[in-house]
Length: 176
Image (cartoon, rainbow, N blue to C red; front, side, top):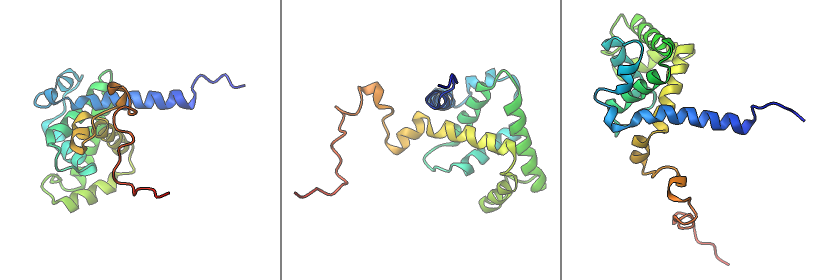
């Protein structure tokens, strides 16, 4: 029998816990001047931050979500790695790469050109790290859940059994 303490279940639980931490940045009270941003060890240049908020929106576009939500996701990711400057460097590297490929005018380009330029760097490590942080922050957050009408995990409400699990109206009635 294997004595490996890292089981598949523990791995999944750890991933869910980490993505939940990133999603907690979607607290509406943190959007204007995020405490997470203030607590990060390094401050991003405002131009880098603006470029990365735009990149986050293009990666996961939702018209109903404001730029403040995308900025909050990045703030949360910076806070989660506050013990080191690795994520800050990844954001700066992505911004620099996009600026280099667009002669310093990435934000001024139209959406199609911005996406094409992002495709040129999508195989880099920093792009993958940013994409993962934004994905976890957006889809594990209450702001997005509200946007799609999801009330949140059922555990907080006593589970789904007593909350309409059998009350679906989109399946055809079964005839006997």
